[in-house]
Image 1 (cartoon, rainbow, N blue to C red):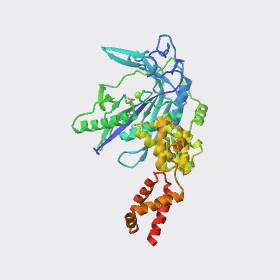
Image 2: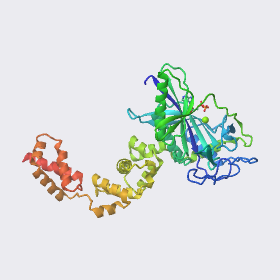
Image 3: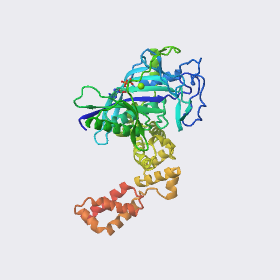
Image 4: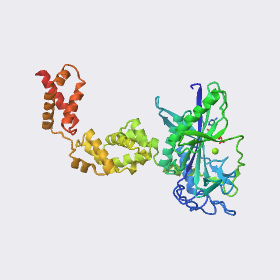
Length: 490
Ligand code: ADP
Ligand code: MG
């Protein structure tokens, strides 16, 4: 295995969240939810005699992504016709960009966390990002028939192409996550891969340690989650290495991923390069991007994940690891900032999101990006953290309250009152409980005093149990130590 190095370049298609289509005022609708062919017009149907008009908002969204990916923005970009025949493409050509894309030569830094190994950072070069229009959707219904829905035809699409700088499935996954977060923070795409609003397609080959050139690559399409991107890439890397090692040969092909069987399927072999007969789109003017426009858009870019991470570290004193987790999904970062706006200690809030709340979400199989659809509002969450910081709840009872908030959506103060969970810090009550436990466990106490220090935890546990889990752990620790030391000297 170690003689082989995976080579991966990604092609990403992101639908842009504009109100209207790329080349007409036809509205953009959710192409999974909406009834078929309800958002179409003569331009998106490609009827003869229609003329396209460029959507300025789409160009600006593309510009935002180009700048966020540190690309150069050439002063002029141009649309081109990509000719091919397929029933989902009513005009017989797709308006795309070819020789003069919107953005070129960028990069994106990723943080990779391999399951077995140290995290590391890596810079992936972005070759280009260009604008185009999406195609319609075909549904094959059997019996040689297919249905076509043109709602998606003409929806603005940004294609982003990386250099083949990605060398493992882990890196492909990290890139996809990082890019998706940026698109979401920019508000240009919602990142939904299951609906195909965002599509990430890896080109994969493998290189032997003695090779001086790249080998033949394949391309995987129809991946509807980042998880599938990871699994399909792993499977394809393994398939190619096995093929080469057994004396076979990798043929250029387009593959798909069978989600149910968790298996690659070969869709078609490419005998020769596709011939699209590109030429400049004669119905559209070239697009001039003034330097003023570029700078104006740059100045308006929102705070992106990296900048937010640095700010969280600098102003709240969070660790890099914690800050990274909080900014990784825009929804989490938003929830955290909402929590803080209720006046909570930033470190406590971070600990309770990354600890208590994430643990609950994992247990319930709830995606982190959906944090805002849990029953616990940021305001209620902030109240819980305040109760812990004020000493009203200890860690254990707070976790129980959080679980009940998850189930019922109630305010934490109501749950504490109803269930009598408030923490007990009263010294007299705790002193009495400690004395009882030491009397009942005198042998254990003697063992502790003769050097078995680990037994402190067991004694502590007995006291907490006697107090129904509600005692202030710090007060118990202090009093237990005092009373044990008193036994030593008596
Ligand atoms: P095309 O123009 O035919 O689409 P490109 O050379 O532009 O092909 O590359 C498309 C994508 O494939 C890019 O992301 C690129 O990084 C990647 N790529 C190119 N060659 C290889 C290779 N040998 N192995 C893996 N990926 C590759
Ligand atoms: Mg392409």
